[in-house]
Image (cartoon, rainbow, N blue to C red; front, side, top):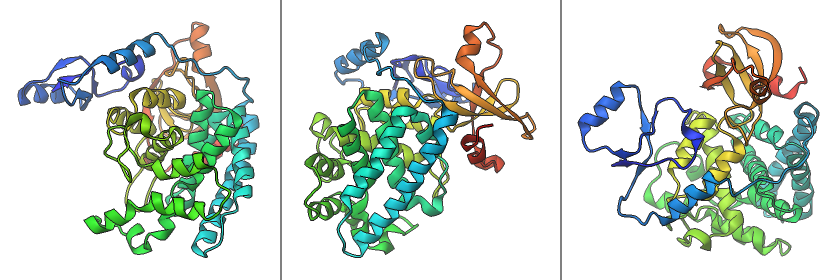
Length: 389
């Protein structure tokens, strides 16, 4: 296999990632790399593929052709309470939608627009607050939280891409409704912890169509939303469902929702699966480029959330621990963090540090070593993120 030339500096910081491009030709080479501490590498699956698309992508990223819109942001500390209210209201609405559908009632689409409108407004003011909140839910409310997390993360990414307000609302509503069709799948299949049979998996794969049928009965849902719900499990390489669409034949909103859907699924605790750390989840998604995802879009998604997404617990080179407050797309290794624990994991008076500002002042002593798993240390990050100090 050939280790690929990475198209940006995004992964150079990652411990245990082997990044030297070139072929790995033997098991012996693999053993050497393992002994040296490497555990991951991104490889080209088919060395004979046309590389022109990847070369163009490399050039676009290297030249920074895409620039997210520069918008004034409300301070995290000021927006987090407003965002938390919008998020909680959305959770209540998600429960009501699912209950209504199970009872055979119509979806309250007007209320959905209002609910998503509040999320959009918060994303415009400070998207990092919503990214943080999306990681604070517990697995026992996953059914509802996943709907809202996919909606919020999709909206945050759409805002980063410069989408207009109406587009963001359609995107958010589609994200909220994307799994509505699972209400038509027997609960014994949805809640099964053992491996699904082929027949059971075929039934699960019908949920995008079921969701569309539910929403079509409403009569007031835009086609863009219906398409996004129908296509959110389609894949870039055509291996998705239900229509095996490829590349640009997949609805743009569906492509965004697909990224948010996979990210939230990977980073959420479930009754049968522990969450993956955000930076590792993004690394996995990067490895899915040209298979599940458009290469450029997944890279932009990673840049949007940051190498250390907001809400991540991180270990610093002085031994202390902090929580990422705000990402920094321009300097992804230098987010704004709140230092909360000493090297022995004892709480300390919190200190807000802007790593980019510190570096600009020539104080480059403090840096992030790695992401840490708060559940492994039984740390509840919510109080640190939702209170001012």
